[in-house]
Image (cartoon, rainbow, N blue to C red; front, side, top):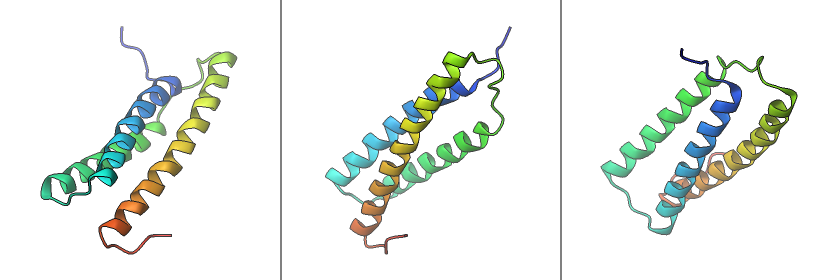
Length: 103
């Protein structure tokens, strides 16, 4: 029997996605290169992030215990901090590639 994806499942999956994106962006900042492949990879990563965000709205969390909900709260705070880091890296890449910084 298939089980529903819970908030906890989503947080774990999105956290892994963030780590992959952070590493990709850090590597790109370390060795900046502009190419069609890099552009496609960035577009793909942004598309995946939008899918994660849209899926978030449909999650079930009602079956989680109080302990799991507290874990989810801590994980969400971690994810929000990483999102700020990702935004900062993207802003730095835009500046590096000659685009005006979006505030």
